[in-house]
Image 1 (cartoon, one colour):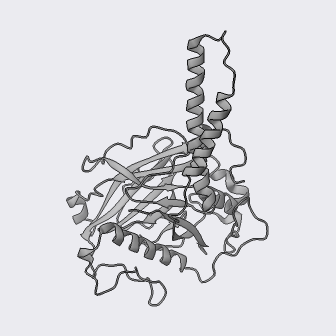
Image 2: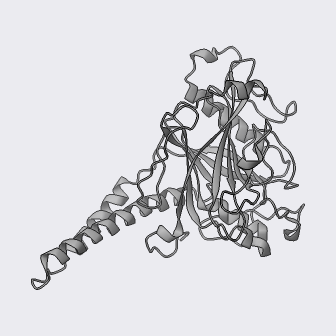
Image 3: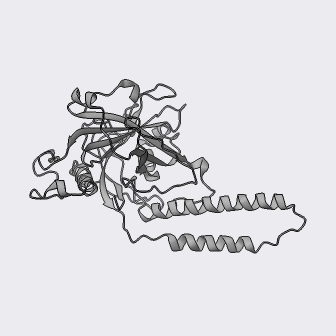
Amino acid sequence: MAGTLLGMPGPWAEDYREPSDPYTTKIGGLPDWPLPINADLLRCALCAGQLCLVAQVYAPLSQHRTLFVLGCISPECGTVCRVLRVQNIADLDSSQRKQPASDGEVPCANVSDDEDVGDMDFEQLGKALFEAGTAASNTKRKKPRKKRQNKAPSSSLHPKPTALVQNDVPGDLVPCFYIYAQEESSSLDLSAICSSYSSLSLKEAGSDVEDPSQPEEAWEKEHYEYDKALTADRTYLKFKKRLDAYPEQCFRYSYGGRPILAAVDEINPGNCRLCGRPRQFEMQLMPPLLYFLQEALGERRHLVEKWDWMTLIVYTCSESCSVEIEQAKSNMGWIIAEEAVVAQCEASMPVQPGFFS
């Protein structure tokens, strides 16, 4: 997929436990499984507690598929997450396109009935269906979230849901709100900003007078540490600028694209457990998601305080494989595969005060 789709906050769910369907994109609430799930996949690998839904993202390619990001809210665990890819082995065609939940309520994907889907690029089809799924999420509630008078830094926040007070939030899940898609502007260019930042930093470094009494080995070590810090600062700066451009973005989606890193890390997502092919980037969760959840939880925000990540990066099979035919036969064509998620946390960030400034 050439561009990046941003998951933007839509309306709060009237009831955090309200069911939707696996074609809905949302944050929190209850996951909408299209097939029975092995209970072991829903338990934390550290404390064996029940995992709760962090994000559910309908992301079809040539087949219906949904990504479920799960997290542990146990205070002992912190950032422990799991990503499950749930996919149908049947290829999508014009007769299998998802229809609105109720007539006239949800717009369909922008794919005409007389268009030959077989001639479409799968990435274009995936983008169209993803946008349709998020449009469905956004129209589930008649009233959009209204803006509050008191604003959080650089972001206009929406009110807590009125149907549930803070103390009514169930203990085994987090508040639920729906998501709509917005395409990131391709005109956003950070190269000049980062280049200027780099030049300024190098100029400042070059102005230092070298101490001839300092051992060469010590100077080389110091120079290496400086270069490392400079690279980290530039990486974080690019992350911050992308976030500042759309300060309410809850996640970024770009199948086969590149993530924006919050820290300089060497990431090895490994290979698909089903087919053995390499995994590739598909999406990442962003900090505003945590802010909205904490605001909704109020006095119970401690449930997610251990989630200290700046971004959760999801990697999935580069072939989006569906080789578990036997599993699919017993589950109406659906298969499930565990994918990889990488957390970049605040502890690894360079010191930059005023993240939302």
